[in-house]
Amino acid sequence: MADQDQNAAQDSAPVFQIQRVYLKDLSLEQPNSPAILLEQVQPNVDIQLGVQANNVVEGIFEICVTATVHTKVGEKTMFLVEAKQAGIFEIRNIPQEQMNAVVGVACPQIIYPYLRGNVADVINRAGFPPVHLAEINFQTMFEQQQLAQADEASATVQ
Image (cartoon, rainbow, N blue to C red; front, side):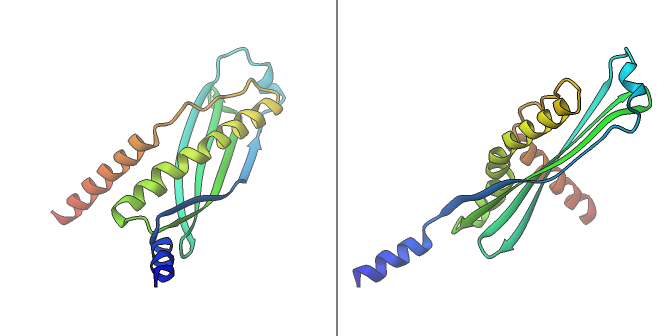
C-alpha cells in the first residue's frame, strides 16, 4: 500500500525538465552588399523579439524565442537576420494558474542566451561587428502581454 502512495505522489509531483535546446531556423540576408559595406554612415538597427509556445504532446512543449535584426543605412538594408531558437520542455503537474508563467517566462529565459549567441555569431561571421541582443526581462514582457490581452478582452466586451 505504501508503494502505491509513493507512486501516486511521484505521478503528481511537478515536473519541469529541459529535453533539448536547438536552433530551429536561421537566415541572413545582405541584399545590398558589397556596395553598402563601403558606406561610412552609422546604420540604424531594429530588433524585434517574440515568444511562441506549442504543446507537442501531453506534458511536452516546444518553446521558441525569435529575433529579427534589421540593420539599414538610410532606406537600404545592410543585413537582415531572422533566428528562431527552440527548446523542448517536459512540464507536468504544474497548477494551471502558474502554467502560463512557466511557458512564457521560465522557458524563454533558458532559451534566450542561446539565441543571443547565435545571432551575434552569424552577424560576426557575415563580416559585421556583432550585434549583442540586450538582456530581456521575460517576466515584465509576460506581464505586459497579459495586460494587453486583458485590455483587448475588456474592449471587445464593451
